[in-house]
Picture (cartoon, rainbow, N blue to C red):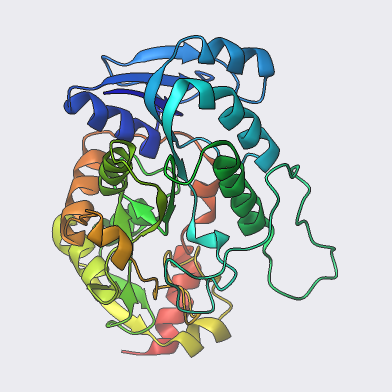
Length: 343
């Protein structure tokens, strides 16, 4: 099996390339060479996928049995379209990593793999879907961009050759967003530790290595389709996550659970100040039965937590990304809320 990974030097892209090599496949990695490191054993092609000449040069390195696209998270649909068109003659299949944000109902409504996808044409530019400053409705800009990129994939590759994967929250070693690392470092600091919402609130994060494995399984499959890549509904809770963080770090942190209303009254920013906490009804109600039937396997959340802590403790450093600084509540603000909770 010969595979092309668009990205391939950090987090999900690197996990895909590593897994492909472990399977004995030939892996080519295409990126700009500005961040991360390519796994040993992978062939590297440098270039910018928004530059037509670079895409043409890349296509000349083919053919490949499949492409796994992990590097289009902030790319306009028209740029994805240019890439899929350039690679279609030299690639058997195309696996595009999208997101659950592409659904019109996320995060307010429960979702299935047949839920409505947002509008977004395959040739849209980066301005498509931007909202006026006085807009007070849902912000679908990112979702529309990703939906357009999905259509850019299926515009170039037929239904049986195109695979769309829609992960929710991806955690694990190498994470650059900073969600799980923040919780681990906070647990290691010990003391009374603010915990958001209800302990039994279900969550559905997935390990980066499990997304990578499923992407490669689909790259080797013979059918196309769209799949939600999340852990099963109800398998894990916020308590499971935070308890695992406390146990694996060996700290003396004591979880102090704060009701949603108190956190909202205190102006805590959802999703970032206390990572993974969000009150929207559908955020952790994403059905993934089709993906599970197709072979998606999600390892225990405690394993993801433990392996991420090992990576951090051994000096693991994520690729620098501005989203890292968005995550985590300040000790001062946490102390105020803990005081409001009482003992």
